[in-house]
Image (cartoon, rainbow, N blue to C red; front, side, top):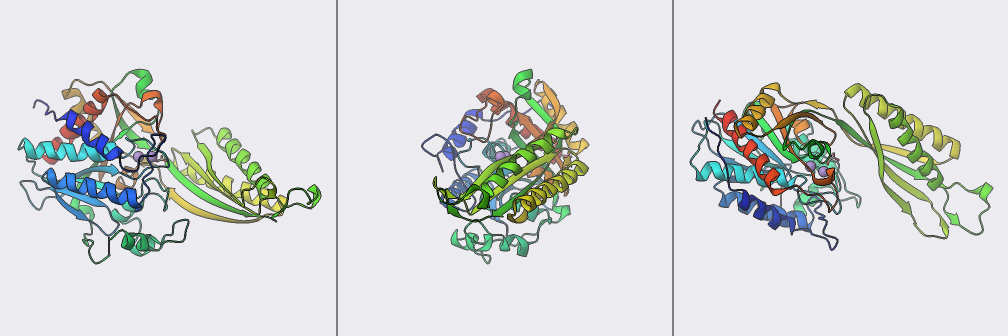
Length: 413
Ligand code: GLV
Ligand code: MN
Ligand code: MN
């Protein structure tokens, strides 16, 4: 079968339109879950789905689902998707590319009358990044890894629950469609994403076919010492949580460096109170992000991180609380879906490479639920999670054509 191609310029235009929602003066995009920018983006995406011929529903976790019926109406769906929330001052492709490509792919199926046997769906997952609430609420909810009650009780930094945030966004529980997606309702899931790393660019390969995804976890560490005057408190009498935070930050780095299994660990967020030049801080909160390709490695890292924090806080006489913000297992992609992605790339004459993902994605939760695969395109300078994130238009187009042809193949099986 010869490959189908879609409207690349229209995809670029909708990506650009979405990128203007939540745009910051430095060019970065800040769209946090259920804030004004996210609500506006949700409206934009839902409208685009309707314009593209899709039926739109919002599930109890606020995931937006756009659906195109197949010729066999009750057959399980073949789905694709990603997220539209961003990190602080993030780029315009992380997440958004997968969502807008999914819509464009389904729109092409609709316009070119390419109806598949199975219904096709595009899913916008809620809170992938974990900036406002813990990460992966949408994909954990949809796959049953998190119950609705658990999700609704989660709180943001200001103590606002997810349930309250939903209500304030006009997403009242009574208006959300109570779709429960059993395993039998989604036959396969695909996610198209930028690589967010340097490998494809360096090797000049346009398509990555992901075979495995890193396990990742986050610990929030709350340190409490004694707030005091920076001039009058003798050094020997201080209980300064900033010093303890510094020891933890260095220790976290050493733990990951010692690992031989490809572990990485980062402290990228520190909150200091009261955060004044002439005051010894009373409280410091930091978040440790750590990752490993194997579940054993991830569990080992968690034990090491907790032991480190307990040891240095005891030595420094600092009160401590450790909260597990998230823990997501590594995932293997389905060999069956990998084979279809490879065949699609080949039919389009595109070179590809099998690869591992060091970034986390909703599809690692989906992999516990259904046959799952992931497609990467190159990231310029290998960079992401910042305003410089970009990908050449021809690579964006190549990726979405692979997505479209994979959806068509899977949808007709
Ligand atoms: C998701 O964006 C991650 O942090 O890997
Ligand atoms: Mn991201
Ligand atoms: Mn992403």
